[in-house]
Image (cartoon, rainbow, N blue to C red; front, side, top):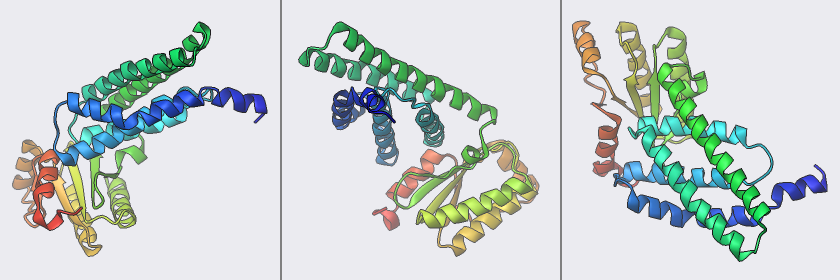
Length: 274
């Protein structure tokens, strides 16, 4: 990279640092204005807000950050769906940060006596970054609902505390996907040093004897690895089908929703220090 290219990429570095330095303050202000959440939800949400602010700050660099936006959008969709927080909350956060960071840029532009042309250049870069982030987030969310997400995203493991993670399942589970599920649950569970893995089935359309058998095997394998599996999101019609088929999973902890399971784990005395 030439010296001119390096200079162009870093010419707004002071503004980037100022925005990132304001991260904690922006997160706290947004948290105070927003709907209160339990700590088990609020902690990963605050982390997401911090990562989003950093991403928006990086939009002031001249190099393309599209790859960073793609990765951020996919992980954001997974997190928000599993914490049962609507896409609207994420979009409202981005609009809030657009407004507040815009004010920071304006204040620093006046302080540094920037020309109108330079100020416009910075603001244009920033708003373009926000627009691309919103666009990719919306598209990724739509793809997840349509069941067209990639295999990496369709079996993601999202760590929400030091010892608790979520594995959301979306769409049908065939024998090949069941094998991937087993391998990913064991490998990621061990590498992340998990105590609990919540397997969310709210996106699974059918649970038959094959699927149930595979889930039981996954739970048993995780138990041997020292990880407690918890099932959430079994819809009433699927529960009825399981009863009719004689499928029994009494030995596996189950909760109606992911949110309920997280609250239960938070209150459990045995994991107060997770």
